[in-house]
Length: 179
Image (cartoon, rainbow, N blue to C red; front, side, top):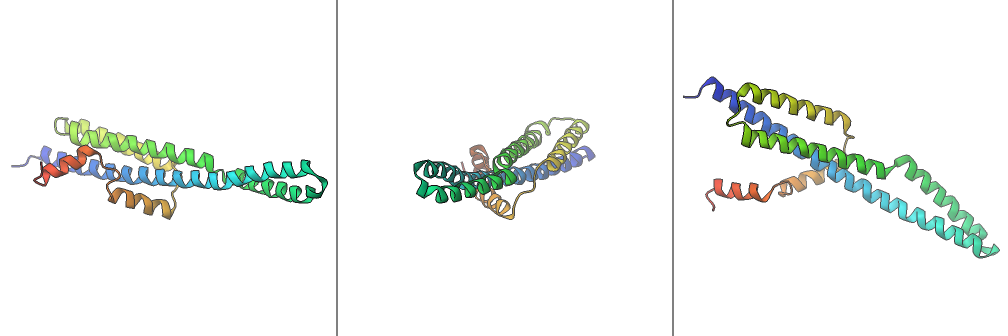
């Protein structure tokens, strides 16, 4: 017969599982967003740098190429302004930092659920859950929202097993009757 303490422990386990899942989706979404920002930084930055270099060479090469060099310099300046305004490098760094913070929460929730909860006093486990939930909410406030594309790519990665460890796949096989 289940005791009230057993029921509380089951509810705690379920809530830790939910928190872990939220952190998984959030971390993967932020990683996907960081990839997009890094790609944008390369796709904008490389041509801007090349235009600036070529424009300088053209202006110095001969008077006939000054107009072309000046046009390229203006285009490079415009591209540099876009890079500065959009700031994909900083956004990529912020998304990566957010993703890693979510991974920390994901790991802590999984360890509490699988390792500590079975033997931990339910009052202490409830306090641990409250602290993890507060960390998650703080991280949600600090993280930039992700694009639909990053969300879709995160879902594809998660559903494809990209967030599973070898131990998780091995344990699933054992639970499903495998060796």
